[in-house]
Image (cartoon, rainbow, N blue to C red):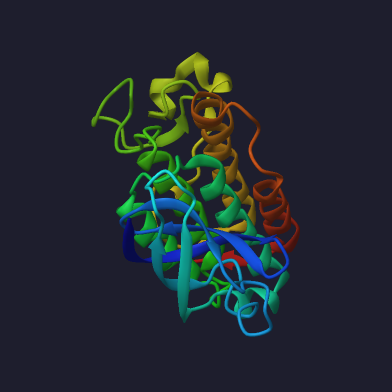
Length: 248
C-alpha cells in the first residue's frame, strides 16, 4: 500500500533511537500517523516542526499498519511562531484541536485548506486571532456542529438585530426574539457574523461561543474528554494582550 499527498505536521515524538512518529493532517487522506526513519537526525529535526507543510509519501505492507513516511519540506510556520508568544500559542491550539477532534484517516479537504490558509497567516498578528476564531467556526461546521447565525431562530428574517446564540441549537436569536429568555442565551458578538475589526473583548466573547459548542457539543459526542488545554492558553493570551488593540 502506498500514496502521496501534502500535509500539515501536527505532532512529532521519538521512536526508537533514530526514528520519529509523526501525525499529519493530509488533504486527501485525513489525519494520518507514520514513522519517519532518521526523524530525530540533525538534518530532519528542523523540517519536522509542528505547523510545517510537507510533501509526503506513505508506504506500508497492509493498509491497517502504521506505515512509514518519506517527507520533503514545502513551507513552515514554526519559524514565525517561535518568534512570537501569541503565534506559538495559536499554532499549538490549532494542532491540538485537529489532533483532538478528527477521526483518523478520514479526509476533510475543506478543513485542510482552511487550516493551511490560517497557518499561512501566522505572521500577521493584527489579523490572526480573528481568523482563528472563524477557523473554529469552520471546524464546528465540518464536524456537524455548525452554528446558524444567518437569521433569528424565533422571528426569522424579519429580525435584523441578532444579539444572542442559543446554547442548545446554535442558532442566532434577535434581541426582540429573545425576550425574557435573554439571560439564558450566549451573547453574539459581531465578529462571529462579520469579517472586520474586533476588539479583544469582542474576540473573547466569540471564543466563549465557539468554546461552548466545542466543549459541550463536539467533545462529549465525538471524543468523550475535555478540550486540550492549548486552546484555553491561547484564548487567555488574546485576552491579556488585547487591551485597546483591535483585530481586523
